[in-house]
Amino acid sequence: MPVGDLERGGGTKNRADNSSYSAAASSYVHDSDTQWTSWLVPIFVVANIAVFIVAMYVNNCPKHNFGFPGDCVAKFLGRFSFQPLQENPLFGPSSSTLTKMGALKWDSVVQHHQGWRLVTCIWLHAGVIHLVANMLSLVFIGIRLEQQFGFVKIGIIYLISGFGGSVVSSLFIRNNISVGASGALFGLLGAMLSELITNWTIYTNKAAALLTLLVIIVINLAIGILPHVDNFAHIGGFLTGFLLGFILLPRPQFGWLEQRHAPRLKSKYKAYQYVLWIVSLVLLVVGLSIALVMLFRGENGYDHCHWCHYLTCVPTSKWKCDDT
Image (cartoon, rainbow, N blue to C red):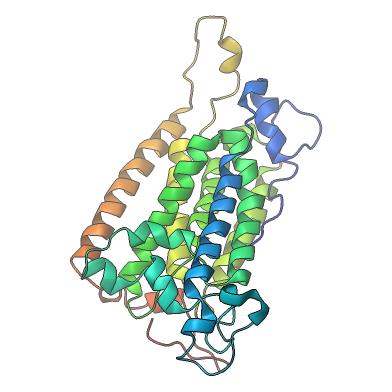
C-alpha cells in the first residue's frame, strides 16, 4: 500500500510558493523546534522485520512441512526457507506457525480469552511480499507524519489504529486467521485525512490535496474486496485513525504562536476544532467499548450488518468468496 507525497502544493496561506505538505508545518508555525527527527517509525520497521525472521526460525519448513504437497521454497535458507507456494504464495511461514506466534484468531480471542492477540497480530506478516509492501507504506507515510507531529502522537495513532482494526476484524472473521500491520497503516491514512480537515484553513490547494488523498484511500480500500484480504482490519484501522487525527493532530490557528511574547488575544484552536475534538473522542471511546463488549460476548458482526460481507469480498466470475 505504498503512498506518494499526497499533499504536494499544500503550503500555508502566508507562502507564495507551492511547497510540500511536509514543509507546511514549519512555514506555518515559524518554529524549527516543531520539526522532529523520525526514529520511532524506523524502529517499528526493524521490529516487524525482526518478528518475521523469528517467525521463519520457528516455522522451520524442512522439519515441519508435512501437510501440503511440494517442497519448501528457497531450501538453501535451511530452517528459514518458505512454505510451499501452494500453502503460502506470499513466501512466508505456515498458518500454524503464525497462530503460535500470536495471529488473530476469533476462537482464541473469545473462547480462550487470549485478548493479547488483538495486539500481537499487527507485528506478524504472512510472507515476504506482505512484509515488504507494508513496510514501504509505513516508511512513506509514517516518517513524514512523525517529522511533523512527533513520535508520541504518531505512535499512539499507529498502535491504537492497529488495535481498532483487530477488534473490527474479529467481529466479522471467525474461520481464518489475520495478521499484518495494514490496520495500523490505514489508521495513519485516516489521520492524514482528518488532519487535513481539522486544519483546513491553513492550507492552499486544499481541494486538490483532499481529492488526491481520497482517491488513494478509495483505491486501497477497493483492493480489500479481493479474496483473502482482511478489509475489516483496514476499515477498522482507518476509522480509528480518522477519529484520532481530530484528537491528536489539530494545529493552532494562524497567528496564535506569534503571540508568545504578548498577551493571548485569541484561543489556541478554532471553535470547530474543539467541536471535532470532543465528538471524535466520544465516538472513539464509545465505538471501541461497544465493539469490545460485542466481541467478548461472542456476537457476530454479520448479525447486525447483513450486507457487510461485501466490504471484504465481492464475488465475481473470477473468484468466489468463502465464509470468512
